[in-house]
Image (tube, rainbow, N blue to C red; front, side, top):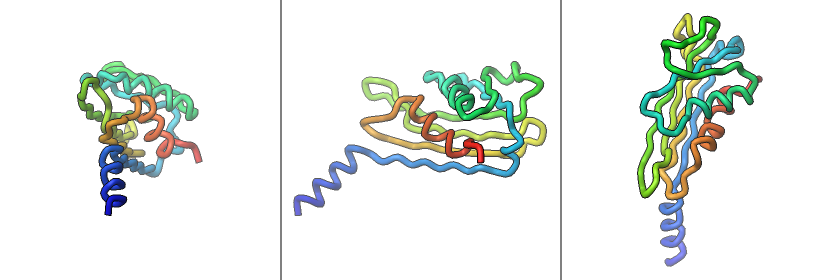
Amino acid sequence: MRLPALLLACGLLLGCSSLSTHRGDGLDRVQRIYVEHLLTDNHRLDHAMVAELRGLGYEASCGPLTMLPDNTDAILTYRERSAWDFQSYLIELSFELKGRITGQTLATGRYYQPSVHPKTPEEVVHAVLPPAFRRR
């Protein structure tokens, strides 16, 4: 009787995470990605995404949409949700990649982890981007 209660308590304390990604048609033709800076982002996620995308072989840069380079193939937008419990930590990150000209959705992803032991923003970006952007 005590073992199931102990396992349940451990599960609640550790939290659980979920990851979902979708890769649409047309992503294979994308080389240059622009990550639109989110004004409420206090974790510098745009810079972490640029670093991750470069590591995956893409040309990537970030900034406000008004600074969008002319040769951009796709625009990556994201939303983040943070919580505060004696420190600020990221509990959710979702993104959407759309073609610059067509507006077609090329990739989406979402990572969610409400936990007492959260991952760093860089670890969250590393968890969510490669499954959607890895070259085939």
